[in-house]
Image (cartoon, helix red, strand yellow):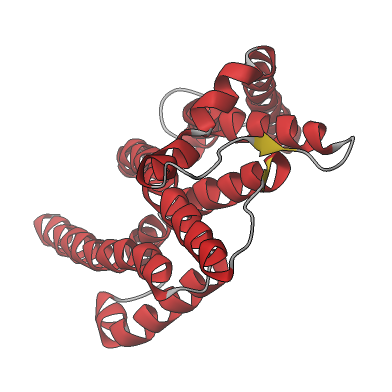
Length: 255
């Protein structure tokens, strides 16, 4: 049931709304990509912080990035623009998506929409920040130490560095969304809190498997750095889901 005085829309009207939502999202994303492309050198310096952070501990490490192909610089620029464009446009995209689905929601569902969007944004930015400030410097540090151990000369190619950065930042941002999916699944009755608690150990194993796949280095330190926050978020998701379930029961009793 739709809320408010708005008339029910037909199929074509829904398609038009969806088209406008996609257009607005694409315009905002394209706008931020254009701005980043204009100041790409400044953004490149910001994104080089993880390298400079490791260089602080290893002054002998060179942080000069190189390209080993004529087209390598284009891959670098694309990666920089994609990382910045997605992160900066995400709040607007979530707002547009919320506008699109709001007319089809009940008042009760609308109350859930705002905190859900806010939580999704907070979790993504939290995960992206964790990937940028913690996981990426740790990965670079381990890679540099292993190269030193093997006696190899370290030359960082720009396209590989920014691809690694994009993978870790966006990957951690996406991974941090999974507790929200758990809470929504419980809220919609797709899974029970008791099931989440029963298979807690299995979930931990899956998290470590995902960490082993996503983290670019095989060392257990980086894998643990990736997995431990997700384990904490899993437990937080169980607690929040259980609280929501009790609240819904209380609402039903009152009715």
